[in-house]
Length: 335
Image 1 (cartoon, rainbow, N blue to C red):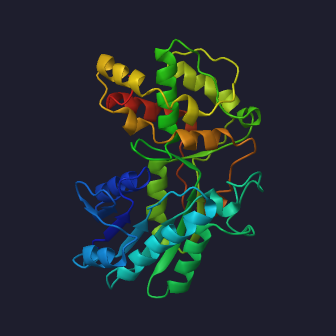
Image 2 (image 1 turned 45 degrees about the vertical axis):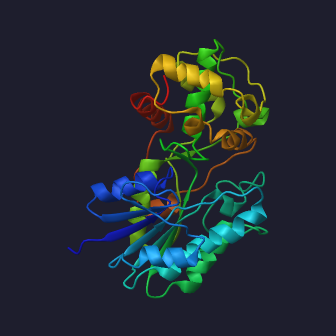
């Protein structure tokens, strides 16, 4: 059987890191791409067409391109040009022989970031008023496909252990709980009152990696989630119990604001508990936490399309959180 060769863009992110590990353990030849570079990863500026071509020129034999790169911007409209440009530059520079391009998307395709939307969201749902870079990226792949196929993977909030990532909810909860415990406080849900009772789902990074590789044998978009739904009202006390914390009534607050001065406290905690992560390493996702905890409407999709096509893996969300917290503790990221 011919060995497959993968190129993973965004290899240091919460999605790309786990995907890279999954591919390597599955026998693939893998090269990672990221802005910072690192072991087994090439540093490349995907916004620079010349740099992208130069860095990809030696990478002959690539059969699969997995795109999980992302550049954040302050407005939805400003997100479009850089994120579309990075994908375009990467595909333009891809070597001959490419078989499949995998695009990582999300529920923004359904307008989930704008407010209450139709649930369960389905891949066949009508689009919404732009701007939306996920849609532009998919339309680009649809236009360019021919010699290669494409898939678009749509996870919910992804659970993983990558540090320095702007969208790591598990790390948000773990650090928020650790600081609450250090201050002798109960664990209060910091989101909107309605968010405590809304229905949500998550996507484990390992499950997502498996689904992303599975989807290379198909063409089209697929919702991918753990397979269960939860409400923070039920799950929050259980997560608090993991950290041996009591729960007090929810109190709406901005984590980005209340955690802005906690650097010195974390430095002391790191010294006392032998932690390996600086506050800069663990404080990138407060704004994302505020975003997620502000969803006072249901946030879930229909994943039956992928099941009908043959993907049947699932993960229990509560156990996923415990496992991620265990991994943070094992790595001395949290006490």
